[in-house]
Length: 121
Image (cartoon, rainbow, N blue to C red; front, side, top):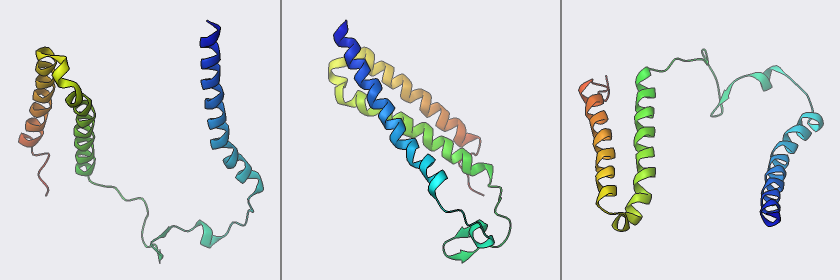
């Protein structure tokens, strides 16, 4: 029991040090950094050119849909890769479960395709 406490205390200590090392420079910069605000420092800046127009531009919803589809299929790879490494030792049930998982994702992709989500206008 005492050994477990020391292990978790060490993990807690490392977590605390990591948090302090991440937050301390931000707090120090807040107090130490010189404060010389000006118009040129507050202006939007991009690629060395002076910005024109309103910086708040609305993007089409289709960009977000593509991003969500990417995330879904990226997470799919996160689940498939470890399964593929050990699938021989898992048996037929694991193969059927992965087939069901892939079938559900395939149905979602076909649904999105049929709804015209993947069509770019």
